[in-house]
Image (cartoon, rainbow, N blue to C red; front, side, top):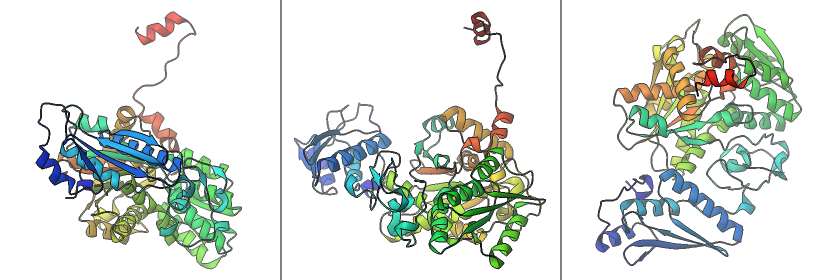
Length: 490
């Protein structure tokens, strides 16, 4: 395994530093670094502009935080000098060389050219979004198209429809790791941070942009909620009409409210999602409206960018990637993204894809469609996934699996994420974490491995579920200090 594919191990002291001979052997694996008195590593990076160096130093700092191993960073004029050693023992360990290799893998990028190739780690300032309708808008992230244009279908700048989606947080779940004694590093890809609160925005920017470029005036989708909200928002941004077909009484309140507020024409059908999808497919084939469900290949193209972001942030692909599986477009898209990065030599290996369906809505696991799927996780309450075959390819080609979790496991993971990690997701999102905890109990994961769980949507998408499952209900008292203190038991 290459150094850059390993992870730094915290040093608590009491171990001897590397000998000079050992350090010199490791030094052969990292180009351009110098050995200072056999006790430190140092390297100087040069830049065209001062702010380029500042941006690079920021990226190094974020890498150091993820690895739990911190270099000395000296920002000079058009230069950055880094020094690495293990402070607690006053010398070098393998972790120092691992960090150096990972830093070398961070290709310095200029803020002035951020649209073509911005800083890889989501969530920090990147200057101006330079292309399409986002040009000149100050942003912390330029949007999926500006970031990954070379990997997406060709669309002219004037047709790109963006709400600056993507760049979502990748959060280390330290508390869950400790509570369950996990042998792996667990990360949460928080897709609820997208503009309409779900991962659907990644695919919708591409699908709506393509529709705009082709001259479409209206789009249509069937939805369990998230696709509807995203399609409605991006159609509004593009000046198009949006038609949304949803199963009556089976859509979370937050999702339905979003679709209506964005101006979509929402039609509730007395049936399930699969029947709604059949209807919109027929309408799109016969009438002048563009289908923007994940059957539209441009949706998959946009959604694959989440895999790119994870690899860019970690410096490698995770060993395992866990996702909820409903209509199966997301697991299909992530696998496509990992395969593309692998083919381009950006990652040395691809992860095993782990998909999880709710027990009452598990057609892929059972091997046949389910006429009346049932689960509290409405976003994956689908009996005949449109991307069924894509999910099977992702599972089989990656050496992964698709399994079931119960509603009780989903709700417990939903509670744990909120109360242990401060991450509020919708119930369906928690299926990925529920599945990982189930597999961990079976000693499935290799020690030292990395696992990423995609959390597909924000918790406010389904406020009814939050209120129904809350462990503590609000209490009402008189507006008097002693009354409040009595309840607080202070």
